[in-house]
Image 1: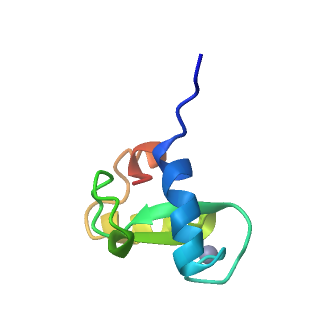
Image 2 (image 1 turned 90 degrees about the vertical axis):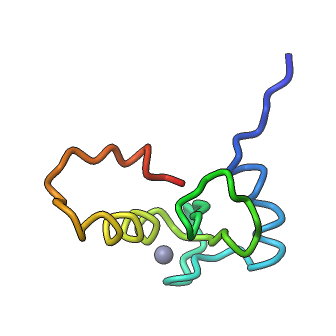
Length: 81
Ligand SMILES: [Zn+2]
């Protein structure tokens, strides 16, 4: 029985080593999540990754989708890429 680390867990360590353990937007050090700048969660190139706290991460995605109808049902879990 082996537990696979989630992609986020796998990216987190090299990302933190490269970027530091804080949100790139606000400097928060808790609740960090991995953000894919191009929205492609399979593109794990460090250049495409950003460490954001949960609040800034959500804002990134809401800002992206708010160009359209923001009242559409938005599954925030599916946006965590
Ligand atoms: Zn933040």
